[in-house]
Image (tube, rainbow, N blue to C red; front, side, top):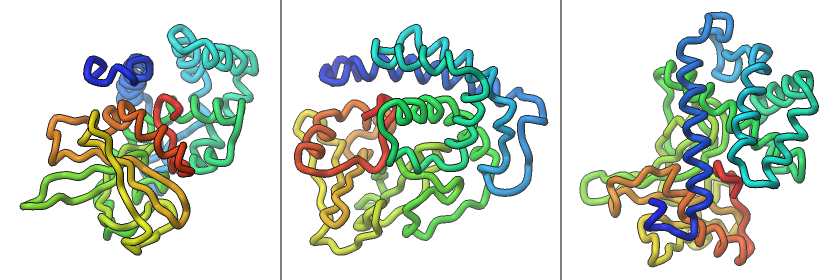
Length: 256
């Protein structure tokens, strides 16, 4: 992926390191004592966030070792704030991840780090759930209520079916082809998508009603694509969308 998308090389290398940390966290969660979890109620009520501050400390230390300088400095400042601040940050993000859209500066960076840390925990919990249904109209994840991070087009007969992947728990749910995941706009004249020759299997879906965009990865064109990774690599589409006055529904794992 890095060789085919040199414009995203730095971000992809950073994400590879983050993904390794998240994989280790997922393995730890899978072997965690029972007191970390509750087996009942909504997904966001199943995690005992008060037990996570020590693990967050280790996560921050590891991220600081390979993060770009500005992020490493922000991690260092957060480390100095101590476990009380970490616990509040984790608790706040876990129960209201969508509020990051209104955050700026240091607060946005701290919530970004909390998201990267909590994502494996949410993915583990979502994997234990069953019977989560979507009729194609849900703009938030039916498992945890969070925003989508990327759309996916999968082969179905002679056409393609669309789904969305959750930014927090990674649950994938069915979604209508012509429907804005931000405001629910369904008039085809107000929806559009664009792609670039360098990355034809990734497109940017825009809404001219709320001026929001989300990228989608078309697996009918490149069946081996990994939606979350290929979304990261499609940086030119983000730049185009921002230059044309659209804002992203949900930042990705490299902060774009």
